[in-house]
Length: 256
Image (cartoon, rainbow, N blue to C red; front, side, top):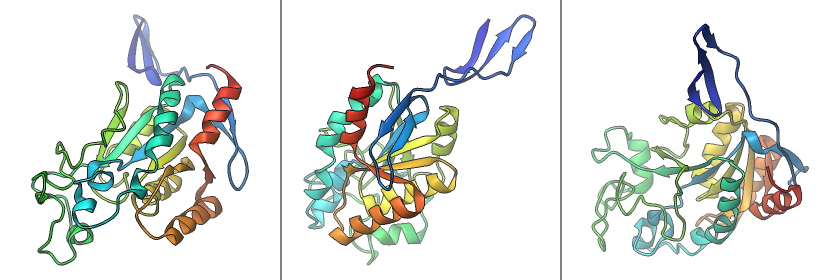
């Protein structure tokens, strides 16, 4: 018998035919403290999306730093993520890095997207070289678009390049999650009120269960933006928890 597909979504091919019966992974419940109510996750069907933890947003010499934005707040998720991600990998919960990674020719970017990063049209925007490093802003394969040195993309992690505030628009993210048999998504990264929230809201509208990990998110926006995001997620879209709460729950639940 041969397997056609992945461990999470496959057919079995036999000499006498093909079985379309999916052999789903066993449920592995995990009770996590959250707002507005505690939630029970299924570790076999939960993934974590880490949004935009990139040099241009979080590192000295990156795009935000070069235009005078204090990137210190954007680095706050690094410590919590360094604690959380190894556990998620051990528990075989997929880690998906969803980062800006634009085409060099910017051919798929409309004016509305370009305007966000260069309102005047004659500054340093997407794809333009940074004055200090010469790296192209948020361009796929550049230092600017790379994940910050403090965090590492591990073997087995999945990388999805995005081109909008939402990681679902014009990307393979939805197809990947469905092929992984994922129903619940944990969200981390920056900026929580912008790309993280836009991706989370689209996930909820597509039918995924969504959980915002508050301590694994940050923003360089004013504090009221974070408060509004927390409120809207817990009120309208899903749940607000912490990476620390997920770690505590996993420690109490034992192994897979």
